Figure 1 (cartoon, protein in one colour):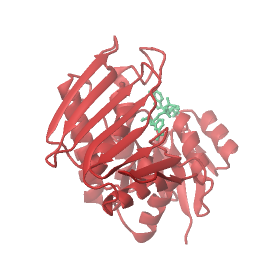
Figure 2: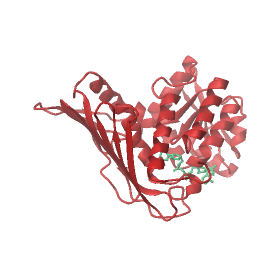
Figure 3: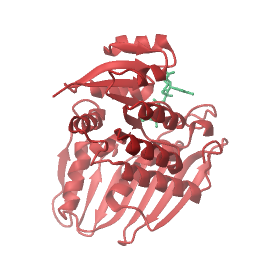
Figure 4: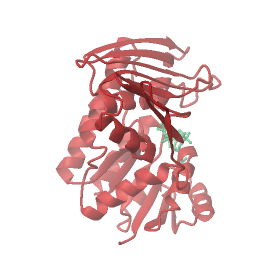
Length: 327
Ligand SMILES: NC(=O)c1ccc[n+]([C@@H]2O[C@H](COP(=O)([O-])OP(=O)(O)OC[C@H]3O[C@@H](n4cnc5c(N)ncnc54)[C@H](OP(=O)(O)O)[C@@H]3O)[C@@H](O)[C@H]2O)c1
């Protein structure tokens, strides 16, 4: 297998986690790092063993030896950073949410498809073995027809109007930052809903501190989803079918254990220790796609990301969360 040369665009908090995952993949070459600060890029390069450090993002996008770029800037920059990479013919794995809204994503998807360049949203949860296991069990009818989904994601974030979590200029708010995970799970398991209701509590900056979402489906299933920056929630997911239930144990978006019980039968537990920290699985998917010459993942394609972003738009519309700079 040829090595895949990775470039890291923005060596911030999550980039550190992602690179820790990359390091366990034999065919992943830690090639280049680009920061707005050359000094910071050099420090990151030395710490993790990359080969090149750039003091601007466009130098990375113009390096002919980069195979794929991981975009890890705050949400509001994903559109312009990814666009620059795609226009330079670079494959991109972009952090979630891939854009602020579906209007931006439609433009990125068209650019990627017109230029036949690989693009994927870094919804890493999709590639974890525990998620593969529940899809298999649900597909085999283990818990019958799906009826209810409950999923949450919450942590207490100190209020700082300038931070990326609360500043609307950065696309702040709990929905786009962490609510995207339960919304992703609902879309994966139940598809696009027929009915969407949502209530938000807003921070003084106007972005959502907390959101409660109720979704209804043609099939008769219901989903109840929550996200918040106001408190630590259990962050688990319960999937109920008419013949049993599946629990994804905390934190569900990186399930270490999956508990399955059919009505009146003994509960079975499956454990899923990650190879590293879990980010390695999405990176492996990108590399497999590139090695096969694919421009989209069959597991997490751009049509799925478009649906996810449209659903997030619709939830925001329900509770009047607007990003004046982007919507
Ligand atoms: N998949 C996951 O588990 C996960 C977890 C956390 C976050 N994320 C996602 O990853 C993205 C980045 O989150 P993060 O927590 O890593 O953010 P962060 O550390 O605050 O910022 C990431 C980097 O972006 C660059 N940057 C460029 N312009 C910036 C600006 N105007 N303000 C601040 N930083 C700027 C900075 O790098 P340079 O200055 O070096 O260029 C910064 O270090 C978000 O979209 C988030 O949703 C994903």
